[in-house]
Amino acid sequence: MTYFLGIDAGGSNCRARLIDAAGATIGEGRSGTANARIGIDALYDTLKDTADQAVAQAGLAPPQRAQVRAGMGIAGITRPGVREALGELDFGFSSVAYATDAQIANLGAHGGEDGAILIIGTGSAAQLRVHGEDFTIGGYGFPISDEGSGAALGLSAMRHALRALDGRTRRTPLSAAVTERFNHDTAQAIAWMDQATPRDYGTFAPLVMDYAEADDAIARSIVEDAAAHIERFIETIFERGATRCTLVGGLAPRMKPWLRSRTVERLSDPLGDSLDGALRLAGYRGPA
Image (cartoon, rainbow, N blue to C red):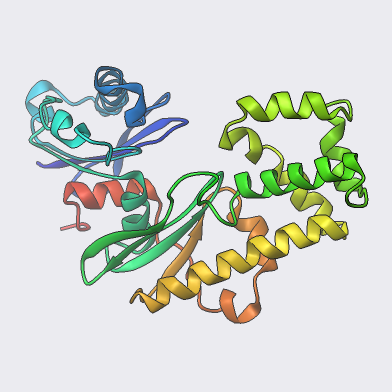
């Protein structure tokens, strides 16, 4: 019997799902950070630990492990030399196919067929498959890219808050809530910004959304600007030939109500998740 293992290795955690030929889940695993930035040795340890958990839960013996076909979607796999280094690793499986975490998410969302996802989380990027060819739009890194993302919302909120402290723009409940984190002190805010990561800026996104929904004028303008970027993303996705588009990512549910109804009508619900996509990458095509 052939078994299929899907792994989604991202910046926050690594998840695995092991299924039999009939599609039944027989094992799962979960570990910590598993993007390529942690180094090949650490990445291998995390991937193997997550896979081993799923194999152990399924109760597979060593000969059965050799019948496992694996698909792994890994954040940062496009970094120079990563794919070559992964090709040298041995997991004891019959085969291992690699892709980016965005590619497996896209495969899962559209059942392995053509389509696109627009990821709206801390960052933003689109992953497309058109006529079987994979490519991306955006995702060049914060602050150059990531339009409409949580990090972008947070940066806009910080800019407004600092201008409000200076008196260059009027204060609003949003600006007060942001500067409160720094005791309303510009020097403290600047010191924080010197070290802040996109994830740090993204922590302000829920606050921006809350105040926008409460009709804070500046918060509304920030979110409306983000929605305009997201709508342009979606338009470009269809202009580039995608037949389906799905919104994914932690910020997507809160941003969707800010999009025009005609835009929302063009969107499709996901058919599956990223682990379904990883299983597709491994070669699973459904029950025999």
